[in-house]
Length: 91
Image (tube, rainbow, N blue to C red; front, side, top):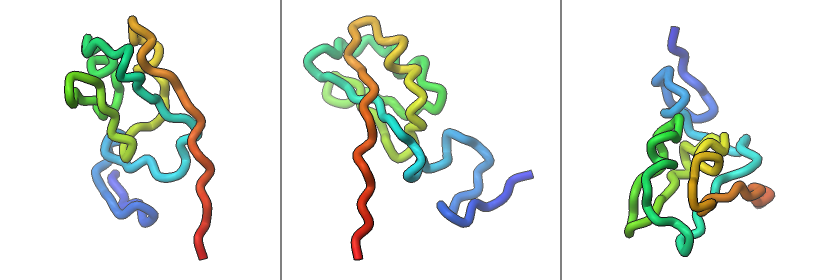
């Protein structure tokens, strides 16, 4: 049964369609100097959030879960996991 998530306001039932929000602790970062656009990260990304932009991999962080699969499969080691910046509350 699909239920509406009140925190993010969507109702699709698919994890790939769920906005990541503030719970991801790490994110994959592309080193554009090393990326050869082989497509391995795009092929293995379980949520399908990696695309080709300007002959390099581009990650949609709105939906990226931070699983690290793309980092593991990259043959050129052009991706690395980086700690998320601390979120700050503004008054």
